[in-house]
Image (tube, rainbow, N blue to C red):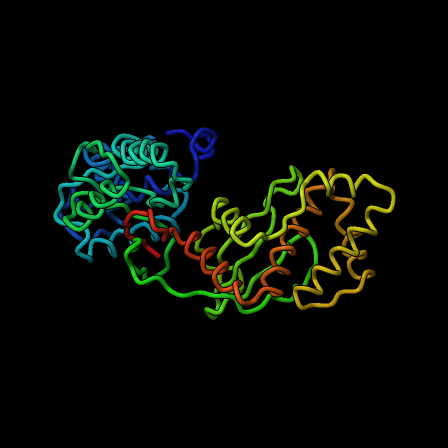
Length: 363
C-alpha cells in the first residue's frame, strides 16, 4: 500500500471518518456480535471482509485502512460509537448494508430534493436529515407524492429497524445515543443577553441564550470574500458545536420582524469614501452600545489597526461585524420578540424543523 499522505490527496477526510464507521459496523456483522474491539478494526482480513460485503461507501478500502492506521484516536472513537449504537434497539440483527455518499443514500436525498422542489421547501439536505451514514435492510426508496408521506415512511422504517439514519461525531469514553425528529418535545431556548467580547473584531457577536451554556455566535466564515454572516450554536468555551443556523431561517426572521442588515453595496461605498473608516467606527460603537456594551472609538480604532494589515479587502471585514451587531442590537432592543427569534435560530440549527425527518445521533 502507498503512504497515507498519498491517499489524502484525493480522499476527503470527512468521507474517510464516516466511511470508517460503516466498516466498523460491517465488522460487527462479520463477527455476528454487538460489540467490536480495536483489535477487530485493525485486523486486515476482517476490515476487507466488512468493506466488501456490507459497505457501499465513497471511499476505497485501501484509503480507509490507511486512515484508520494513521489515526488511532479516530479508530477508538469509531469503536466506541459503533458499540454504543449496537447496545440500543435501533439496529435489529445483522442484515444491514451501510451507506455513505453513494447508492441508497443518494436515493434517500434524491427523493427529498424532488419533493422539496415540488413543494417549494427551502431547507437544505442536512437540515431535513443530517445523517452522515445510513444502515439499511431495504434496497430501494419508493416514490412519494408529498414530503409528509415520505417523512412518515422514514419514521416507520427507522422504528422497524429497516432504514436507520445516523448522525456522527467524534466521541469520548461514554457516547450517548439520542433520537431526533420533528415530533419530539423541543427544548425551549430563548434570549438572555449579548455577551461582552474580549476582542471586538472580527468575531462578530455572541448571543447568550436562556439555556445555560448554549450560545449562538454570528460572524462571517470568509471575510476575504465578503461572505454573509452565519450563526453557529456552541457551548461556552467553543466546545460541542450543534450546527449552523440555516440561511433560510436567518432570512425568514429578518423578513418576519423587519430586522436590518445593511446592504453590501452601502458598506462598500462607505469603505471607499473619504472618512469612511471613521464613519464605520462610529457605527460599530453605536451598535455595541445598543447591544448593551460601551466601547470607545479609540478602542475600536486600535482593534481595526491591529487587524488591517492582514486584509486584502476590508469590505467583508466590516460587513461581518456590522451585520452581526445589527442582529445583536435588534435582539437587545426588541426583547418582546427576541425569544422567538433565538428559538427559531436554535431549532433550525438543531435540524428540528416542522418538515425535518427522524434520525439517531451519536454524541
